[in-house]
Image (cartoon, rainbow, N blue to C red; front, side, top):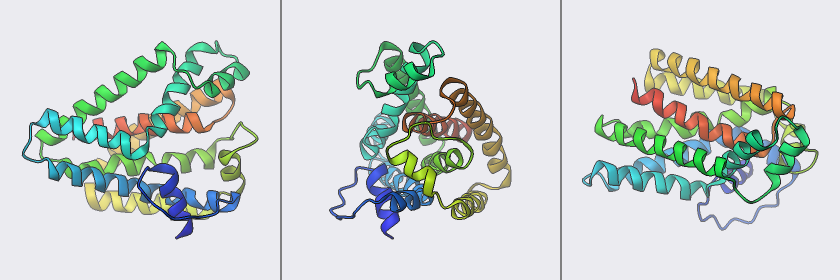
Length: 244
């Protein structure tokens, strides 16, 4: 339970007044709980959708998207912005890319990428509402938070210090694969085998491409690139669900 609380505190801005000492091993053990935290986020989104069910679809989408950003503290959006700046500004230089990711200022490329991503999310949420499929908002946060598990299982972490290096060192590999298998089974139960296969194809292709870009640019991953991948996979899942 301690590991779940750490995951919840790290990935959300829910008001949890629980004092827990974060050790390297506890932080690593929190990784397999990420999909469950995604489920918590998704359930919160569904509740918000229900509360504003009678309002205008565009207004509902704006409220849900705003809540989505607030509940995550824009953590992954920040990673996406830093990664976009690093990709465009480093000119293929690994060290420069890592330095750009540390810069708290966002460049014009980052701003454009964030606007486009949020616009697509807004439109997809609106479409789900018009299709009366708002319960599917549970899916994108869960699937996207499987991405850190897959990355830590398959991709080197390039920074030597910080939370990421501890996660890479102490990751419970068997538990991580078991959690991914459980998410797959739950997905089939909720969506059916056909929809899950489509998700695996689209998400798998995008995940492979993002991992390829990480390895090409910085020879691995950082917290920023993980956050960027989470945001992008959420959009991919949303678009796949809208097109079902």
